[in-house]
Image (cartoon, rainbow, N blue to C red; front, side, top):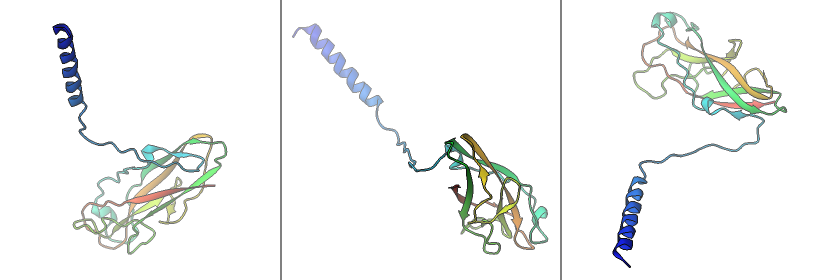
Length: 176
């Protein structure tokens, strides 16, 4: 081999080594999902929603059981619905409040959370959806459907204490 060929080969080997260093792994990306036999796709934006209920004054809820905050609206989007999709209801589950078992408990096992309050879920008409029960049916059409819901804080005791008031629910879409 002549010197020119050896120099080109050395340059190519160096470039390959440098490009391998540029491809070093800095992290991992996991792609998760599931293929299901359903007439619609649950939109990725709906699978990990955060619904802000705001900063509510203790005086809004304090003094009696059954007082409510202002409702916060949220939507679950069903996409790519086939023409066979006629309707759906939604069942919300989670850890129930120990006093009002139709509602979601606040700050399970956490210190410093608000007490005497829970989260109540509501349908599009702002009627209560009991935890673990199906919502009223929503009519579906082909394409994208936005199922509207609400959530409110509800007092479960005469005395409400201040602190974070977070709750978590899971949902299941029940196709009709």
